[in-house]
Image (cartoon, rainbow, N blue to C red; front, side, top):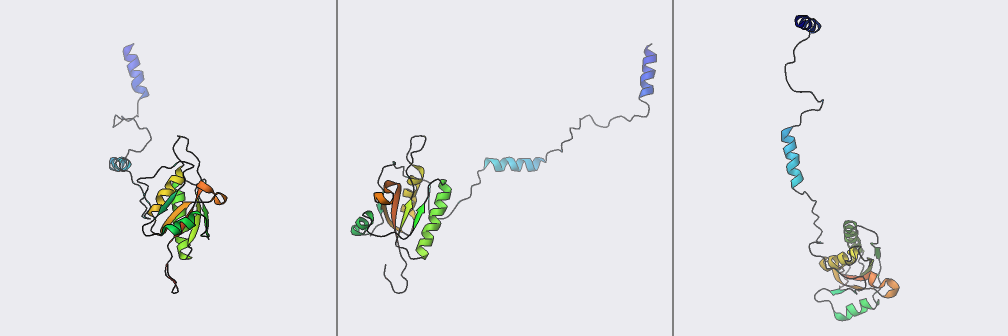
Length: 185
């Protein structure tokens, strides 16, 4: 009986070729080990685009929602800053950063100040808002604007606005002017 089973089995396998390898084919291509190692290495090294615009986020001065902001570069007369604070220097341009991400606000502020300088504008208003963050820390955009304006080479000084122009949710910014057409700074 055993011979019968064996001969039947052999008869069924007639014409079939033996498998030459002992691994199953899953249908997936084999991974390129060199490429895989390179991808793993790239994932461990944080490749971050670095912007060179002079505005650093390394140390941001955290401010409270109702904090009044005030800063003047060296050499700026206190009388000019007093006029700025009282709203006596008219602003010729205005920027609203509400609802922007920090990165978008940074780019927008940089471009806005660059455009104001091209147009020889003396004073602008920047509305940053003063919403408290969910984690209880101070307002993010306000804190960043406070830090960035101190770093910007074209900013002579800034101070929180009069209530009618946004109060502690906005700042008047006094800018350097280039000497064009014989006009002094």
